[in-house]
Amino acid sequence: MTSESHRALLEQVVHAVVGRAAQVEWVETGDGWSAHARLQGASGRVSHVLTSPELQEARFEEPPCSVVIVTTTDEDEVLEALTKLARAALEYSRGGGHVERRRGLVGTRPVLVLRTEEDEWRIGKRSGFIPY
Image (tube, rainbow, N blue to C red; front, side):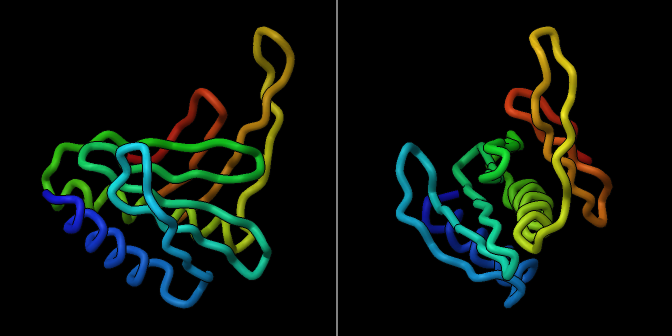
């Protein structure tokens, strides 16, 4: 897949999943990303969905965390991963989810918990559980 086809695929997913439920801004890409969509919901929360040839990512601003799904270059696999990430990003941008404090070896850390139609996502700074 080319960089242009990755952007077209992300545009397709954002249009289908997000529609008009959040304000979408297309951000200039860099650092190897093919396309980057910034979502802002009525709640004011901002999330991001990014795509590259083999990495698909969703980023959340508060708490600052992200989740990456590694894919092959197969279009169906990329489409599935981007759809799941876009659903999580939209749920966050709508004001969904909450932050839990999890105990670790050196104190506590924030974990973003989101519920989508697939299941529950738990996204921390260095670890997470995603329904896949």
